Length: 507
Image (cartoon, rainbow, N blue to C red; front, side, top):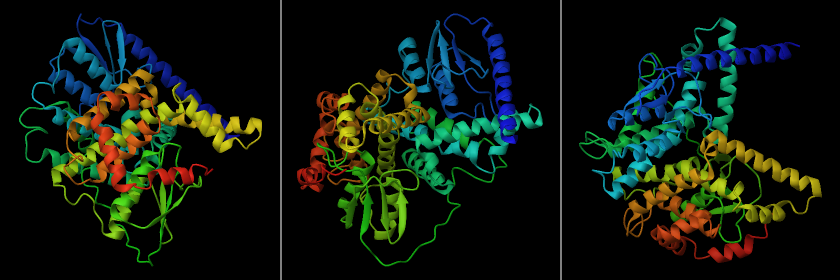
């Protein structure tokens, strides 16, 4: 009875706030707008920053850098994609800060990057921007950390009565928790999330160095992104006990144990690739690059975080390919990036994060939800679940597809159209292609971890999905990525064909 009452009160409170907000938005929208003025829909300013939202502040900073006339609207009116910020211009609505910026570039013929950045610098700037935007440690901190979530609740809903603000924030937290779990970062501990943020910020710091801006004396869009993140992370509340720019507040215990063979839990090979999963193939490639002995386990046994791949070593279980690699670096005293200088390490980190946190989701869509991937899904489901009775195998396939849709929506990529998704992936891959250029590997004659991540993505997308948008892009506009992947395959997988032929019958 108490539970039903709580649900009823929460639902009623949610709709009260919703209709009050809608009424406020309608009132705001009646205000006239000057012709040629962009209407920017964003969150209210915070007490210490123009915005507590990095995408909002980035978009507003771009408008100021490009000197485009605009007017801010602070009503909580979300776009059709369920996102803020978004803009209105000449009766057009554009959602997502990056799509807004591309629209404004075309409409106003402005480009804050074009005049002073080389193609390689544009590629690096794109990867830095994506790294900062797709790793959402700040989002987690704001809504779930013990020392800041209460402040967020009061800032957003402090003007409501005592029970109402708690109930509304509870509903929002529940939705946000589902989104961060779908995105992936919500499956990690608080310590792990802050360590991810630390590596991202140190990479950006290394690229910046002592320069005024990331690429010299003139700012670009990546500078706006970095400014927006720092303003929202460091200036949100001075009394907070957690500083996102100094994440070294946790210390790990070292476990001394007898060495044993490492077990790599991953998906079975496909008919065309050693793995159809970029994280799995990246981790296995790292093991081969460092010559760490390992044994594969291709059973569909997921980690406690619900992830693949994961490893077992000395009775320890480590999930997520990047946490596995950090663990192995310490345990075996190996570092395949040791030949890189600090700036190159930062660039490598940005490239890898972009491929894993952004481009990867376009591949997920292509394989699991697009019309192109229909035949791939049919073969896979037949192979994995064809032995089950008629209704059961279809129910399992339906549940998998439903879960992937939820994950894509939670990440944000699922809110875009198919054309927009492939456009994002194309820009990412062309940026990496510019950084690679005519070199053997990303930073010369010796491969690093970012090379393993790039190889894994190309193998899992272009090779495993022939004639897909990824394959066509690499064949027509980024042939150097294909050459790079072939070079990695020859160097670390002389048994590539043997692995596929030996293991494709695994279920």
